[in-house]
Length: 327
Ligand code: PBG
Image (cartoon, rainbow, N blue to C red; front, side, top):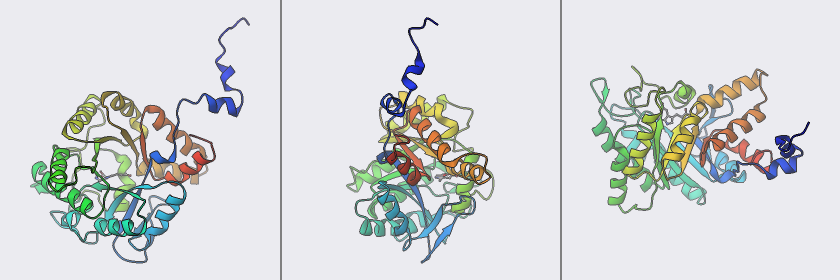
């Protein structure tokens, strides 16, 4: 055959394939979500997320150490309190679970970059992401409490705060609260494009944060919408978000690409609990090869354009990057 251009030419041999890779990543762009709970001496496997654990403050160091050893020095903390109430007071308690975890992490792992999820669903007795007015989440009152929560995280040692509640105006309120207290250089990673998704199922089990009634559709986005995601991201940037996130990742990579074009700040993608658990379950059943699927899903998120990837597989992925399988 007379053919000048043969795309296969660039696919012969691992060296050449690596040379022409378009997507490059390294462990510095991975963030590991860690669950911390009350109590002591606890390392409790999460039934719906095999291989993931809830740690008490005194045991989380084991995981932080293995992450650091794997080259991952950035984590996002999720708190699981013992006490829940109508107004989620545990979220902004100076001695709350996340606040104590932060102080301990700062003391034992000073090099660790500590991010916190700012939300109320783990702390409210009704499981919604804010305070209620009747059956509705009261946006403006919730925003005040979110700002209070973010500030208390930063006072306890958070390097970055990540509001995940999807209330309107929370980024501006958090920025104002942080600035007013002198934390002008603490960045905000906004969960800007967060969909109402069944992919969060295992997380809600892990954190005991499923809503007691109704759903989150009046604050999290309808997954039929794409332009609305751009609107949310632009608004958050306008309000002062330093980075924005798309969540979930796998079924929303179109949004990652779109947001990357629309904003001039770093874009994160969160591969959520359901994505993790589906891979774990299918691999355990022998239907797929876990390591290969992890590599493929990770690269696809970066190929779509994310700069940062939040994933429960962070440690495994760092290993695959180190081995040169991906990266
Ligand atoms: C808190 C929050 C959730 C997740 C991150 N922050 C749960 C939710 O919105 O219901 C989900 C993370 C995951 O599924 O891994 N609002």
